[in-house]
Length: 413
Length: 224
Image (cartoon, rainbow over all chains, first blue to last red; front, side, top):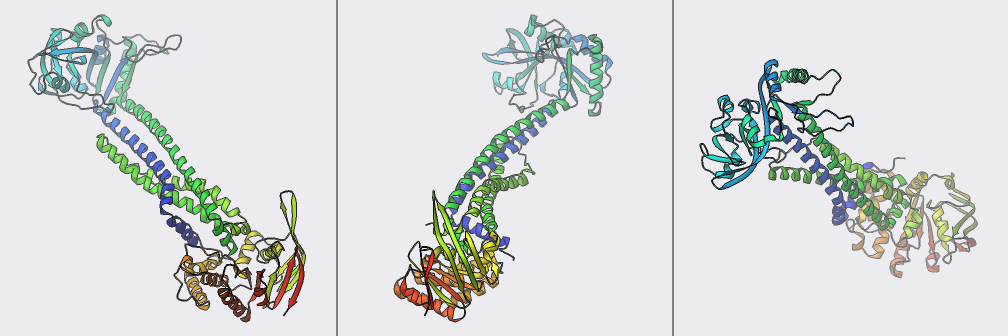
């Protein structure tokens, strides 16, 4: 015997949903919010990854960053990055001399200092560098000039300012030739850097002052570090293909310089931007999954809402169920009708939630000047997941409906 | 058409066992018109539920055209109700969201009929019960008598062998009740087997055979 066709059962389920538009809408709302939250979180996470990728690539291309690392103590404790003082001018020279594929080798030290000029003051990072720093970090000088080796040798107190520092101290005025005081010591402004903008972490990359390495070491940072120590060595490889080779060569050169025997731990660390990028992406990816998982909780709450309403509906429509059974509906027909009803409620919620989530993510991207990433896979996932929620949470009410005794059900008022 | 032997139905209510039917034996022939009468609690509704395949007996045999209905599975019972039985209830039991036409067509959905066949058959049945002009009306737009006629049209949807009516005039005024009874007599005259359950002597007199129940037993079985 044939029984009811699936299309008819779908029509019964749709009819019941349309009969109570407000209730159906409110029931779906939980899933709408859940799906919208998951989609929005995922999209924002992908946007963040894209932003970080752009920013890290913006730090400089083909760049390898060498930082000191305190070797593990016997207890396994490790110092923080940059806390060691194992890198020195000698290392910079050794890398310059021995690593042929290095296009630029730029040592740097950084300190925070108060800067005053014409009554204004500003707190910023003072970066002591050599002229190669510009090439290594892909920086440009917008006006004036960069200091050269002669300025550095003579220990002249000259400074090249980031655009933010200029704005903070003088506003719009041209600062070239003006005098500033850094920690009380007078410096001459000889140049202004081109703007690099905000980094993905909200750090202003234009808020810094460049000055010759030797000057910053002696005047700004002072006795806290050894006289020839550097905090970071930026090495630019001639091409992206040479990044791996250059990194290996730097490792080898520094291990020789520092007389680190085989099997001993390095007292420095080399990172190329590709690996930093990879690490950041992995971190943000994990964070995105976490956010999406939290958002998914609201999807479960939405499912519970559907279950609640479906249980009410089964109670309300007990007589209808009894009648359908008396007229020849099999238990399976009743089960399917109610299960489809909850799947449809959930799926409609999923579709609306997907739309809201994508709109919301695009809106946030627009407001926060953040790249909007459309997670294409989110569409089938959101839809199948919301159907699944409807099925899981509709199963029990539907089973209750199908299990009813038709005689009892018909007698119910 | 129907043979019932030693049919017994007991319910457990709390710690008490209630015997609704106590060894009833009956034979119903094709084309008969039967009124089952008795006070409430006499077992007449239980008998109707078992005859209609809504309930199973605790003991005894129920043969319908040679089939052992008492041994049917749930699905077989659903199909049995769908194809062989037409139910008419005291409270009409129409679905309020559906039009008269859709209500009449409902049993045909579960029989797997095509939408077109359902529409045609439902329209024909509504014409037959005199509601050809009310097909698109919802139950709340129809009078009680009209609603019961829709329900009767629905009971005929799959051309059943047996029409079971439980107090079909109970919710109607007497004039409308007489009309509805007339409809049953007409259907019976066309060859349909009709079983009415009632406690109203007047309704019972409209049937050619009267079976009286008391305490789960047949106390009277007369033909007029």
